[in-house]
Image (cartoon, rainbow, N blue to C red; front, side, top):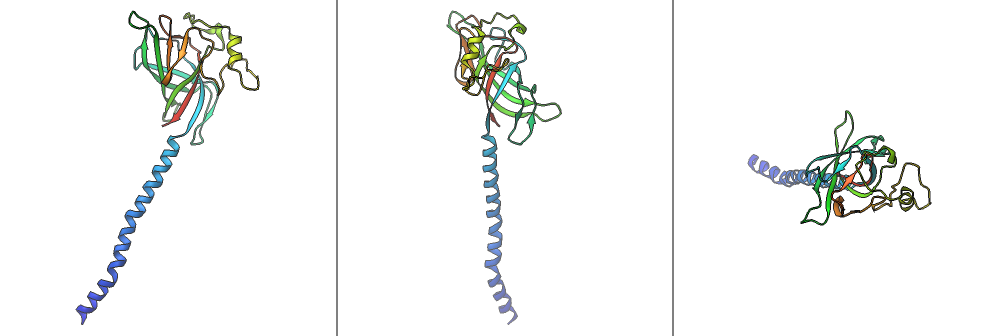
Length: 215
């Protein structure tokens, strides 16, 4: 009689135990799915940053992998809500660098930006691709590297905001695309600058509009 009673209780409880155990993997799967969706949303955040080069660049003197530094010209807000102040550095690297030669009709300089660096804070990884380039807004402070500029007033007018407003030190806006105000230079896919000159030269202070995806 006791053996039968024990068997009956075991039989009755088995479905409940099985259901309870089965709910654990299901709950874990739901959490993993939710986490993946959140990561995808965060990773897909995009924005446009305006920066200025810290140092002059010359494709004849650079090689693939060399570091590139720029600084923000205005503060930005990250998807996390953190504010990054004006002057904060963006660090990138050279993806391609070559001077014009007998075998190449153009010189090339490719750049991408990899991270935002703030003092005392872990670097924020990004993928930053150049969308537009314009001269240093203070041409009297250029490095004298021989970059050929078109008329700066003309360049400013070409990149002015739709309402016609143009700041005294700002040539680029969110609608700017390509190379503005620099002679014989074009912007290709993935931030590659090309020139019919012997090399691609960019003065310190050269402005860039960077299309940034948060990693």
